[in-house]
Image 1: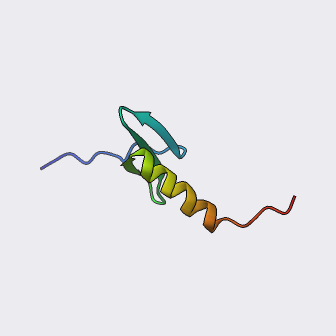
Image 2: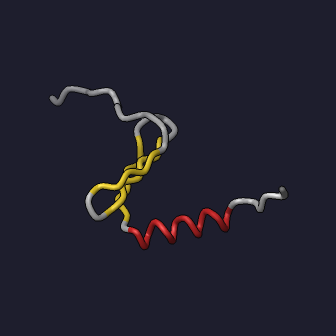
Length: 59
């Protein structure tokens, strides 16, 4: 029987450039993190999608 290991890798949301791509790590409720590798075009699309979802600042 395999040994049960605790989930590790909890921490802040982060994005780092690794080689030609970017690795995004997003903490999840209940532990662990979602890890996604994206290229520069996908980063720009994600930025635009998030900007469209955020309320406009009234400064």
